[in-house]
Structure formats: C-alpha cells, structure tokens
Image (cartoon, rainbow, N blue to C red):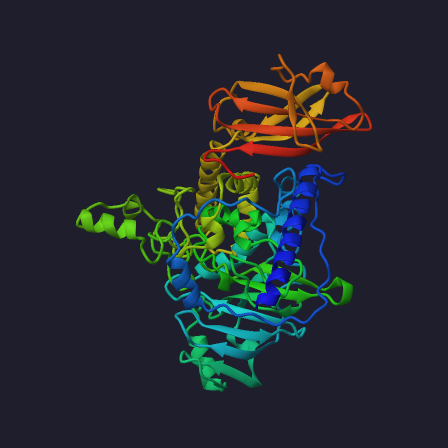
Length: 546
C-alpha cells in the first residue's frame, strides 16, 4: 500500500490539473455558437446491445410517495438558447397555429383503424375494465380496452382524445382509435391465452372469451365500443422513469427530472387532468436499424384523463391531493378534527353526463394541482418550465380544442360541449397562473432599428398592456460580459449598437413597471446586415436557475 501512495498522489495531481484546464476552457467558451438556437438535438445510433427494463408499479408508488416535498432547485436542461425544447427522440415541436383541423384530429394516426375480421390472441380479466389483444384483418396488432359499465364512452374517449392532445403538444403517442363492432366480428385464435387476476397464464377457451365479452358494456343495438391502440413500431424496451437516465441509450444524457419537456409535462397533465402520469404509462421502443437505430420515448395509456379514472369516474380529490396524503395534510385534518373541508369537496360535477365523469374547471388551481403520487420531474419543475408549457397550451384555440374532443365519438353532443367548455376554462386558468410569474414576451425581433414583441398576457386578455423599462447593452460573447448603454430606455436600438461591427452581439433587458423583479432579456447577433434573435433569459418568480 505504501508503494501505491506516490502513484495516487501523482494521479490526483494530474486529475486536479486536468479539471482546472477544463474549467478554464469552459470559461472561455462562447455562450452562443454559430448554430444557436439549435432546432434538433444531434443523436448517435444505438449500436450496442440493449435489453428491456421493467418498472415495478408498487415500488415506484412507494418510493416516490416518500419524496413528495419539492426538491432543491436544479437547472432545467434539454433546452436551446431560447429556452425552447429542440426536437429529439423525446419530443417534436408541432406548429399548433398552423395545424389544420384535419391534422389535429389525425394526430399520430397515419395507419388507419383496425379492419375486420378481428382475431383475439390474448386477454386479461383483472380489474373492472377488461382488456385484450387482437390482430386485425391486415395482420396488425392492437391492444384493446373497454369502458367501465358505470360510464360508457368515458375511458375509451379519454384514451383517444388524450393521445391526440399529447401528440399536438409534441410527444410521441400511439395510434388510438374508437372501434364500434359486433361481437360476432371477433374470433378466438386457437393459440389464444388468458391471464387471470392471480397472474396465472393459461390457454383461452370460448367460455373465457365470453366472460370477457360480458364485462364490456353493450350499445342499444348489441354492438360493443372499445378503444384500440395500434402496437408501437419497433422493439419494446419497457417504460422510462422520471429521474436519472437510461444507461443503455447513448442519447439519454440528461437526468429525466431536469428535462424541460418532462418537467413541463406537469402543466399539460394539470390542464388535461392526467392524474395517472407515471412511469408505467410510458414506453421506450427501439426503432430503426444500423445508423438509423434510436430509442424513441412514448407516452401512453390516457384512460385516466379529464373526468375518467379508467375504471370509474374520477374521485374529486384526484388532482388536488396525492393518493397517500402528505404529513402536512394529515396534520391539518387531525388538528381540525376533519372539519376543515377543502374546496374540492364542494365542487359540483355534471352527474347526468356519464361519458364525461367528474371533470370541471371549478376549484382548479394549475399551481396546486397534483398527480396521483409524486412524479420526480413534476416536483422539480421551475416557473420557466411551466411558462414554456403554458404558452403551448394557450396556443390551442377554442375550435382546436373542440375538434380534438369530437374524436371521442360521443353519442351525446352535450358531452363534447361539457369537456370542451371545461378545457377552455382550464386553459385560461393555466395561462393566467403562469404568465404572471414572468414577463411573457414572445416574437422578439428587431425591425427598422426598433425592438418588437408580443406580450402573451395582453394577447389573451389577462391584463392590460403594461409599461416597460428597457436596458440595452453590448454583449461579449466570449466572456459573457455586458456593457450597458447609458440613457437607453426605449424600444429604439441605440445607434452605437445598431451600427456596431459585423458579427457583434447586443441585448436588451425588458422589465415590467408593475413587476420590477421580473424581466425578459433578449440577445441579438448581427448576420449579413440583419439582427437575429439568438438567446432569451427569463427572470421569473420564484427564480428559475440558469
């Protein structure tokens, strides 16, 4: 051991010197690179062996329920210099304002729904709502789920409509379709199997299939209505978790709890009341081969959105409290002898609309909303993450929302009206809540030597146009230093900046007189006689880390 000590000292000295050199180089690295802001994350092919991973639901629930407190803030990652999430195997930016009604209603559904005859190859009998797997007339595999008898149309519509919303928001989702068919159109495969509630798998016989069919609600004409989900392309690699990284994916380099697209998912889930947003409702798939091989990350299972809890109408406490109450909530109930009724206990739900379940905008608080049990990425969300998500939600027009909800194929038009009206109200609540925690400026640009922008809170009628303070500055892209231009406090770009040298950088910090502690800073770069936006910093309340 004595003989190794000098070697350890030498190795330590080399390591420390190397770290110092790396730190020095990093300090000299320019903030903005020629390709900023990047639109897509460069990814490498998956060339080595991978294997499916499993997530134990009970373990996931138990461990995360113990970590319900908001963790110490960590920087949001997986974003470009504008604070946007670039395209990747996780996320794709969709141009919502330009998506047509047909595109919104189609979503990821490019293959078409199942065509008869339908061959049942596997089934399960656990739970109130049965599920089975079938092949259609074109040999494609579909996973099939039904509505609970108490609420026909509720869960099947939720699954279809939810997939369309999350696709439009940028996530990878399966192709979900509502199928209405006669029981006679389904035939049992000779090799079919059934999994009993005990987990035992055995050959499936006609009587077993009839038992499954009897659990599915019948329409007045005797047909059944189910949700069919086309199997995801590629080799299924199991769910992804909401913290850490996947070691067998070379492109999975960012801790999931720090990804903006997974943190912001909390705001999308709150809007749509997706209380069951958890690891087991996701799936990674190995798609492509050779240099095109990638691990693609999907969200799935949307039967517990809106007023649905898949097998029953949603309990009013869902979305307001964790399944396992926090110590603070328990203490409050004990100290008040259970007499301190939370506002959600007195909320009115449209009980006459069984297909809607329990879904309302009354008492909806986008900031206090909670998933069934703590999601690490949701708990780590910062105001800047929420702002990113909120502006995407606000991009849905009333007509966009209705167009997607209609794909639930409700028999009662009042169900479409109810869900649409509630989503519109919840959308506006999300915008009001998160836009007030930032200076919500977008479309920042310089035209005719003047700064132009749009205040989203003003655009959507949440507030009157405020007055601003402007601070212009030179920006040293190499050192990150700023040199304020004195006396510059208007939207006009100071002459010394607009007439600067080619390739220069400058910026402007815009603060609201109403909320002086909040600001948006825009950075511009001179390129061929024009000034291009290359970066945005947002000072939020509470602060978000850079």
